[in-house]
Amino acid sequence: MPAARIAVIEGDGIGKEVVPEGRKVLDAAARLFGLDLRFDDFDWGCDHHARHGRMMPEDGLDRIAGHDVIFLGAIGWPTVSDVESLWTLLMPIRRNFQQYVNLRPVRLFEGVPSVLSAPGPIDFMIVRENNEGEYSEIGGRMFPGTDQEMVIQNTVLTRFGCDRVMRFAFDLAMKRKRRLTSATKSNGIIHTMPFWDERFRAVAGDYPQVATEQYHIDILTAHFVRRPASFDVVVASNLFGDILSDLGPAVTGTIGIAPSGNLNPERRFPSMFEPVHGSAPDIAGQNIANPIGQIWSGAMMLEHLGATDAAAAIVTAIERVLASGENLTRDMGGTASTTSLGQAVADALSVHPAEVRRHG
Ligand code: IPM
Ligand code: MN
Image 1 (cartoon, rainbow, N blue to C red):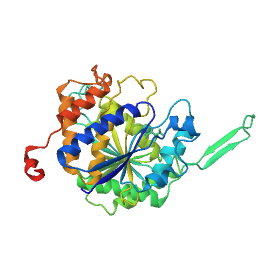
Image 2: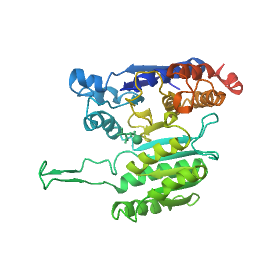
Image 3: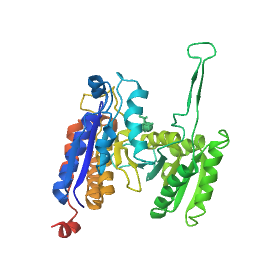
Image 4: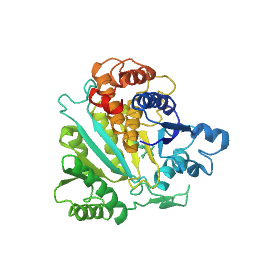
């Protein structure tokens, strides 16, 4: 792997606590596998907003467009409205950099208590559309503050946008178990969701080897709880994917471990790796947040950069530490701190014996 330029944005709240743990593990992996990881820090977020009146500088996107990847913690703090903090930082990155796939793995780890008594082996991928859908600026408000006050927000689905995220999901399914589930709601949402189903059928035509199924989002959430082990790849619109990607990890015990990759599969722009959890103001600053979502996001980032062995070694280290039952944070039933769990994963990192020869 050539030298990698990584833009780091810790952001807000627990982002400032979990990103350093992610870096600790990435640095350890870099030493073990001889990777050249070059980190550049960007102090963007709600503190930056307090100092400068904006979440990032005006030319912020230009400053990170030349990096290979972005390693992000979390964005949002009660002092800045969500519309301002998210739509002037997180959303512009996801959209301008065409990160149209939000890939969110869901796994049950040994050692992490699930909320289910007999969960089975949960291990699936959510492919969330990340650039359009229900998250749209199309709409507005009329007659504010009066009795006639009204708001409209339009969902935007394009053929191009549906097809490209669905193709990604089918390609992923081809590499896994050749099974793909689509989340829909075409019985209640009568324009956009039937279109989603139509595009799903059309794209499926190019993948005859993949077995497909589709469920309305309401019953799909029930299936996520009742038989989570039966899913392998799930493709969903922006909002449905957002909801499913909190529910899935919650079923496996905690959303604190869930990672994500905001991917620009064509690599025209940097992709961004961030945990699924947010800035969590309620537990921020206490050194109790779970750093695994950030650390695992770091593994996804290395995989994207082509450092597959190092990525796999981080996931193995996570598995070992969680299975040992020591160093678990509160959300997983333990009492460990953010820093001690991060250190434990860094310490557990090792090159697999079969790989020693290759890496010297
Ligand atoms: C996520 C988050 C964001 C989203 C919020 C903070 C806008 O929930 O990454 O899942 O909805 O995409
Ligand atoms: Mn979310």
